[in-house]
Image (cartoon, rainbow, N blue to C red; front, side):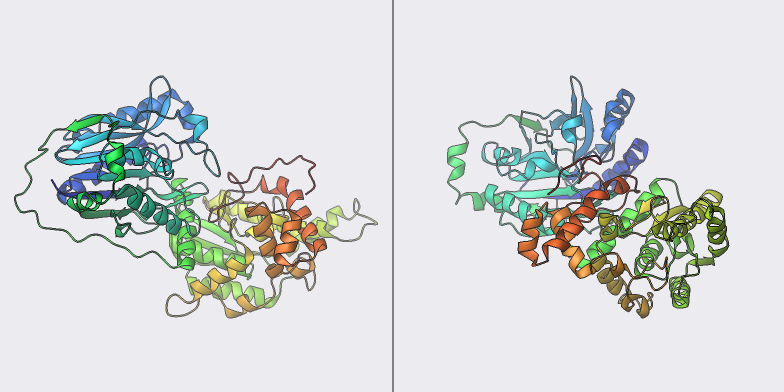
Length: 575
């Protein structure tokens, strides 16, 4: 069978929803049969969802996932299918089940267990040692899981050079950050050319807590060219015909193979035929979706992460405090696009310091988006606070305490609406603010999900302008994009009263938080005064206790707050 039809079932699996995930896999198996696929792939740990974390420490969970995987064998009649699950015996393994014509014929265990960034696989899994290839007719292929293909000398190389595999299939749960798709495809292209093999990569899609999986499953030919690609941030089903004789011809020019076959790999034979192949199966055009432009990619990640966090946690509607500023405006846009405007409520909570144009802009935004809008003034409650605290505060000047009281009143109002109506509160703080602690505990930090937690202020503006360029007319009022940002918690307040300008702050934060550069390196690279850099660094370090109490939010960078960056709250290191 020199020509093989491959299907990639890029599904959105939910952690712990074994029955629901199995239903998606069964539907993918049937769809693969319908298109005449020979081989169909599902993502890494697609039975359990990824990452299952400490669910893997529960024997009942492990048993349920293995039983569910076993039950998929019959659904794979007429196909060869590769499905990710958690195997266990003497230990627990990140595994791929290989089904062939209704039988479970082989199990592959992941070799390289990532333990950096957001990954904790060494905590849960044992790495494997044995590598096999599988032969179906005259097609020899190798199976690997995610990290295994990122290493140049990993299992795929052995499968190609020692096992003679012309097809290297990899099932994956590769989390998103901006630009990840490009770097991942470059790596896969390198693996394909280095091993003179077709690389088939099936990736998970969907949001899981702060992680987003972007899909973008691909097939790369032996020349390193992408010949099929799935869509980003949505479920997709990628089908392509592969001519493995092209691999054979290409390999005739590769002398490495003659030296590698001295120690061949064990081979698992898959008897043919599975079902009679149609005598003249018409060729199928490869599914090839173009990657998204940068800003649309990031915006789509924020939409998917928000939608899945809200929906998978059992909520239907959300509520947002609308200040008339840029951050809450962008969060409202993302929420409306993620959940539908009918499921979003924006609440304006003006105080004595709120400018009239802020109220107007919040109302205009809500009308443009078609979301529900309500106004709940905080002034009566704020005045009551001031009166109640007048005696204990006697002799003290007003300061940030009174500012924070306003933020906490607003947080209380939003949480009351959440409790009464079952709405999830989406917070509106961005990464620049969270980095330096420019946020109020139990105030504007109160909520269920922080949509912009990993989005620096400058990018907030870029994404807002991009969103305004979509559709027939802008939804965010132009004044929101041009007026100086302000918390409006005291007269004539501006963010720049408390923080360096964002065009100075953001590059320093990127260098210190995301790249771990020292203050000296930052000063030299950015030409920012030492006093400014040290002030920012001290603010970042002091705010760790706040960030630890913040809700999760969508991860879009290589170093988000949360799983990526785990610094002690109590520490005394001064950079």
